[in-house]
Image 1: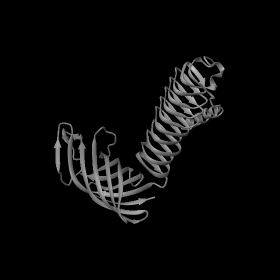
Image 2 (image 1 turned 120 degrees about the vertical axis):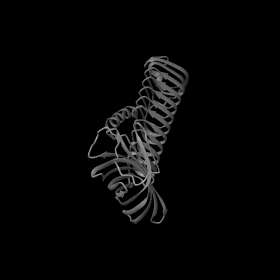
Image 3 (image 1 turned 180 degrees about the horizontal axis):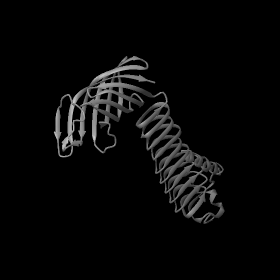
Image 4 (image 1 turned 60 degrees about the vertical axis):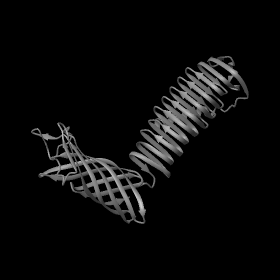
Length: 352
């Protein structure tokens, strides 16, 4: 992220010096490589309806269509469609469809569709859709950002979809592995690690019909948060450990009364065996009533619908890794055994 930011600052510093606006209009220009072209060194004085840069061109602006095999560089605004094999660079504003193999950069604003193989960089405000292979970087953004890394220095109003999403202020949805948002203006982060200023962060100690104790950590917002969990139990005098991940949502009912829904998948480790390539998955949907005792402390309880899938066998028979109190259904095939039942969940929540 630091490397991208430094490169962005350097490129925008170069663009900042390109502040000459085109004064005349031309229908067509053709450039082999600047300044070898139909307009020569005066190409920066013209806005072209159709611009063709065989290798790379430096022009005043575009009001129509521009095509370049390597680079399209403009000192003014670009309106219409611009396609380049490597990069499109403008010191003005982009409006329309801007497509490149490596990068699109604008020191002004961008509006429309930006598609790049590596990065889209807009110093000002971007509106519309940004799609890139590595990073979308904008001063502020309205619309959709789709990339490995989406970075909005200011305000986001829309959606970010990627591995890492960041916005200083957010309204909309972030979907990724890591979602970070500063001021919450109505953002909903959906991912593994969700960090929101003044968001929901809590520890929970719980128990159910299978595990003596489970410890969970929750992060994100009450409306939607990720859950990391570990638990310990015992069956046939052998230890059963669990490690799991899931998602939760807390819905206010009235006053201190809330509804807490959770969807969690736990991997069970039987008799202290970790990483033995045996699959023991406990999937559960918890529907809890939660009472907020104080601002930072709540208690919860409710039913839990559970399904258990295992392929662990000893001497050709499935092992009872856990003791199920009863079953609503149970099926044992050649490789897997599946069972389901309704249990319970009780816990205490300590929010930060």
